[in-house]
Image 1 (cartoon, rainbow, N blue to C red):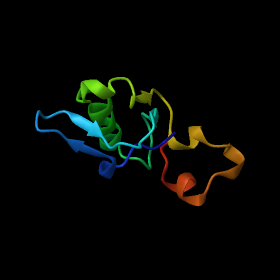
Image 2 (image 1 turned 30 degrees about the horizontal axis):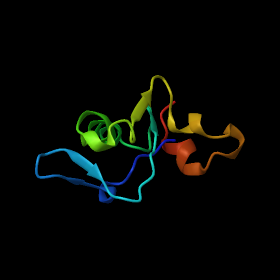
Image 3 (image 1 turned 90 degrees about the vertical axis):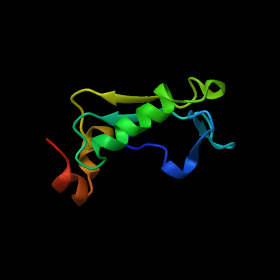
Image 4 (image 1 turned 180 degrees about the vertical axis):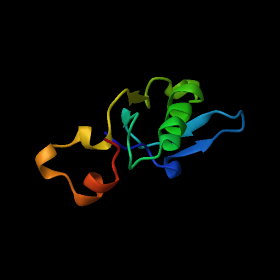
Length: 91
């Protein structure tokens, strides 16, 4: 939650599709529309590679969903927010 699979976990095949490396288990990436810490472009990139461009052999294994109206702090217990989240997240 509030994160994505890193770029080094995937390659682009000769046919142009995204192929995640062997050993990466199926993973659901949950991002937040108003996340002030994870850039919106990283969430969009995650959706593109895991849903739109994913190799047919891995279809459905690496979905990415942006949750409307949520911010990064929405994934955490509000009593334990680190200062970086308190200071930099969108309200």
